[in-house]
Length: 245
Ligand code: NAD
View 1 (cartoon, rainbow, N blue to C red):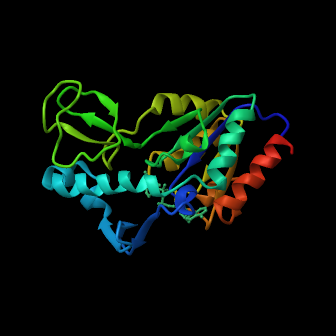
View 2 (spheres, helix red, strand yellow; view 1 turned 90 degrees about the vertical axis):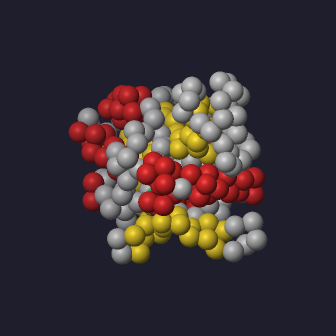
């Protein structure tokens, strides 16, 4: 890894798959977010029914219940070897490092990662549209509790970036990707923009590019190197290479 000092890592749903959080599933033109409910039954929602501001305006009860269930399910899952390996890299890498995750789960931080940016928001955060404050949130949002900051009811929504909304931290991400010597994409389908375009920015600025994924992503051809396999095997092996051990 000579000449590499600044590393940017983009992670997607695939890194959490082996922890038991399902990835998106596409069937024809329709994309689903499946999950297993507390009774062990498989549930399925079309992405446009739960991951858009329009869906929330149409049926807030459905959307709040969906995210309440996703938030509650976090207590039943744990980081896997891939999250652990990235946390080790974060702790030991002396150069600049930024882990940009599209995931809304909290498995990177529970593994110990610190240099982390949740570009699509977090299940464990709520956003009050009445006072525009964001706050840590562990309980259900249900039918709209009172905001602890402004004391108004009905304004709280999941602090999740839905399709059609602006991802968080784009200025920080742009700066890091433009300065990166190495850009690594892990467990993402390359179907969701702007994240899917980071590899092109990194390449434009001269970074080496590596993809680690179960199968070739939509943008595989953009990467100098692609390694196919499960994140729990590929990521620890790659981190060992980087740290030279
Ligand atoms: P995606 O579901 O579109 O694609 C997942 C990718 O991971 C696929 O390319 C798949 O081949 C790969 N994959 C599956 N299992 C893997 C494994 N064990 N090891 C390595 N790779 C594996 O996910 P995306 O690209 O992140 O985009 C989906 C959007 O949905 C994101 O914006 C994200 O916010 C959201 N999402 C989040 C979660 C989560 O927080 N855990 C889960 C599902 C979807």
